[in-house]
Amino acid sequence: MKQKPLSNADRQRAFRARLATRDKAHKDAFEAGEADRLYLAETPKVAPDGTIVAHNHIKPAVKLGTRGFRAWLARPCDDYVRCDCKWAPHLPEHYRVAKAGD
Image (cartoon, rainbow, N blue to C red; front, side):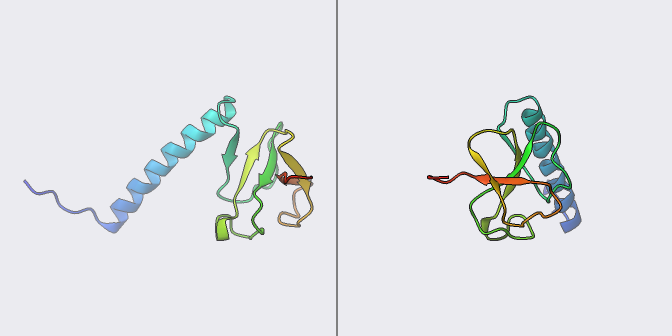
């Protein structure tokens, strides 16, 4: 018997459900210390205790993901340096990936 094709709304619901499951698993791994970063879908208002907000070397964009600009939560370490690019002025501080010579 041939299955009826899914509507666009049903496909979108299924996609969001898969995405939510993946994101929850990643968040759980980060909180358990099994992942070193938790990628963000939007700029946070504050960094949770014990974490920093960091971004990659790409020129910052308002919308995360634009031109490859990504940001994440991480635990403080020497891989990051304080950044003054003004990407998230509401945060007291944020960091970027350290470059050679930083």
